[in-house]
Image (tube, rainbow, N blue to C red):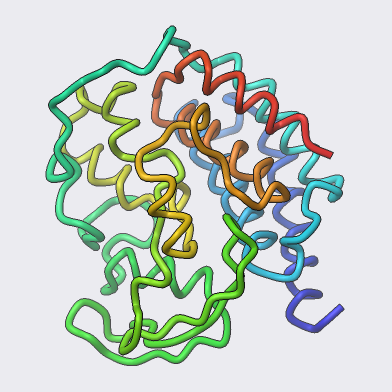
Length: 260
């Protein structure tokens, strides 16, 4: 195991300990509202996904007992999501309803740190980063590399050449979130959702284009080893933001969470 992966393994164990404490404490945790507790839990899940998906663990993550524990917890919470028979066919979605893309003016993690959300996620998910200033971030990611968790492909990122080879995906797509309840939110909540690191991951451009705004019933990561983590994140984000799920996607998520 490389030194980098050893650090990730230590971090993963630490995060799983926090997650288990959070699950046991539940909404009775001192000083935490139910919503804050849900946010804490899915933030921990997100960190686990990043620790596994962007490094040496990506090939066989479903074998990790901690991931299996998190999957069981997410599966139990899947029953808490409101279920609708099918995705509503709304025709009023507009990306502008979620604010300016990658704005730093949000109240979620990373907001107000002087860098746009895209660079925050690139800095989190890529390795061997080369950084430098741009108008939207004084420490922007100019270059780096990673293994896309959606496809397993190794991707080299360069801002100067083929920057679109790496894209930032919303685990729960914005258009899907709109259909499943975000249409009723205020603007501030929608902007937070669109820039919440818990709902974002760096992926290869082709996978992001293939997915589009598809729900889990129609699309899951091509890399089967990442489907469990994808489902964990999808469930916890939906739960924390109070979104519904369509019946076919609920079944697809349940199947993905039966990992191992």
